[in-house]
Image (cartoon, rainbow, N blue to C red; front, side):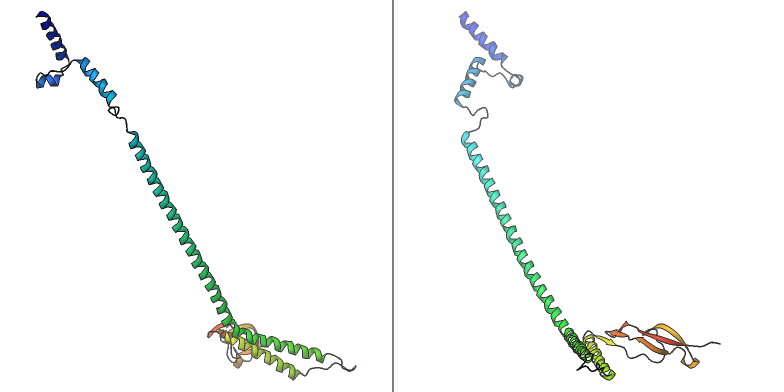
Length: 235
């Protein structure tokens, strides 16, 4: 009887020591001895290796596959994006080359169409001057020991006038036209004084001689006529 009472007292004391303050406040509750709890924990740890937070190898493998699949999808997306950029740049380069070729052709056509009317009179002028030079050279030759022939001045002037007319025609196509021969009073808007000569009072400020002709372009003065103007004499 006493032995049973002693065992009960020992068990009762161990159970009282293991009771927390919160448990005391909530009332007495019996707990197993510590030796039984420790053995139970060891058994749980042996039976359930994942109880301490260890991960399942199958889950890790699945997560790894998922990450690899995501990386492959991302790399595939980047590859398609690079291909799209390359195709777009290639298309832009083709468009640029096409536009460059069209602009070059347009420029050549523009130059040809606008220069052709100007070049033709200049070529006629060149042909005329070349022919005139041949005639002058022929006139300078001796024929059967006779003296060299002299080209009549009238013929020379006719050829020169023909050259001038062809040149004026080429300039006219460019909307460049000559001024009329300056006469009368000096006009500073159209004329440029090169020199002055003494004249009578009634001729003061009048044009005495034209040194260089003036020209218009699009009805505006391109070059003023260079003239000599008279100035009255003072005593």
